[in-house]
Amino acid sequence: MKSTLPALAIVGRPNVGKSTLFNRLAGKPLAIVDDRPGVTRDRREARGRIGDLELRLVDTAGYEDNKAGIEARMRAQTEAALDEADVCVFLIDGREGITAMDERFAEVLRKSHKPVILAVNKCEGAKGEYGAMEAWKLGMGEPVPVSAAHGEGMGDLYARLTDAIEAAQDRIRAEMEADGYGEGDDEEDPPLRLAVAGRPNVGKSTLINALIGEDRLITGPEAGLTRDAIAVEWEWDGQRVRLHDTAGLRKRGKVDDRLERMSAADTLRAIKFAEIVLLLVDAERPFEKQDLTIADKVVTEGRGLIVLITKWDLIEDKQAKLAELREEFERLLPQIKGAPLIPISSISGRGLEKIMPAVSALHKNWDVKVKTRDLNDWLAEMVQRHPPPAVDGRRVKPRYLSQTKARPPTFVLMASRAAHLPDSYKRYLINGLREAFDLPGVPIRLIVKGQKNPYAKDK
Figure 1 (tube, rainbow, N blue to C red):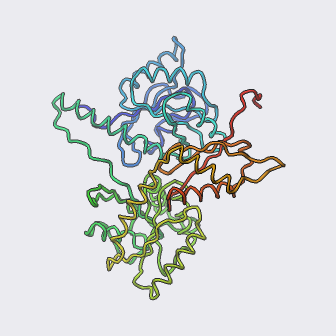
Figure 2 (figure 1 turned 180 degrees about the vertical axis):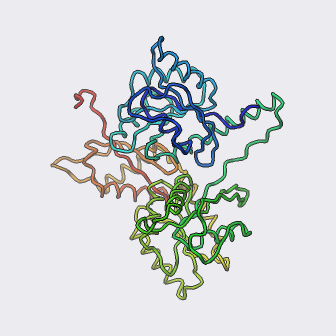
Figure 3 (figure 1 turned 120 degrees about the vertical axis):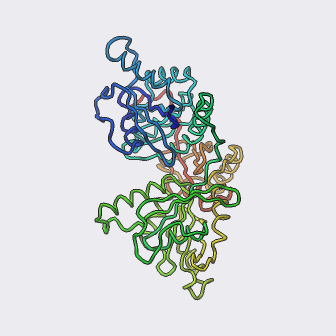
């Protein structure tokens, strides 16, 4: 019987990190990893997962042009894996940039007519940024910067894989029906993924039980009842929602138990694969250092953030307290200015009806796409109002602004002397974007690039 799992082949030239990515998706060190090229020879298969997607992973040997010897047999193995794959991740090395072998392999992939996602590995440092931008010239769509060794970029890779995997699953079901293996159901729209995070014993499981209207999760006065990141399916206003209850996160220095360390890693993974994160904060002890650490992690991952102030029934002067909390939050976390702050009580049900409308509005802002013409009209006005300061007697000149992706909104500013643009001016532009295009509570990424002089000699 055919496997119901879609096959994901990880392909590329030697020593770009295919086996490292394979191990990360498999969740265990199945493939041998070494700095020397050519360690992987046969294609290796395993069951794997990214987010909530189950996959049949295929690790392949590095693709080389040799037509004889062991390299030819390795190439045949890679081509066999390519034929069997439903989706391919084409991995390149961001630190080395595009090579002639990458370009030849891109031609092979185009002729295969397989869905291909271009991923740029080793992008954990500044060296990988140029490789990620250079990858556009392969003509295979938007590249996904990742670090297979450090687990960075997995959320973005998951988002790109979702549509391709769903199409592959539909195709697998159709083939199984044709072969008499049973009937297939139409795939529903992917659910909205929410992670509920916070310190231990702040009421995360109680909130989820209150939202779904049943005692689905164990709750109690003891801290640390939740250990795994439990996914709960729910439907709100016709929209499928997947709620992830997570373990409470304590300060790293206080975590000395191996099980708690694993729970913390599971919580961080749930945040990474969420779209919106609900951060629960105790009204009596608001915005402690660990609350801010979790919020900063959410912003770093580029996820939308909603702050829920729990145990609101215990507060007497509610209006004054809410104003105080709003001022304190925007002072401590200016990078997420305008994030919704909702006072709630899971026990009495106060404020719960405001959560999902806020989630829906924030999700639309997180997925927004702004027209390039509107952006550049706005940029001209911002520069005219407040030009960038001169550095060493020469002024930095912003020239062109475009949005390269959503989820979260990411913008690229082309400017002369880009390396000299002060961080204060970047914050000025980000705050202006947030205000002009009505994007409260959404992480905004602004990448400043300089135009490369084609006549300048490479250093």
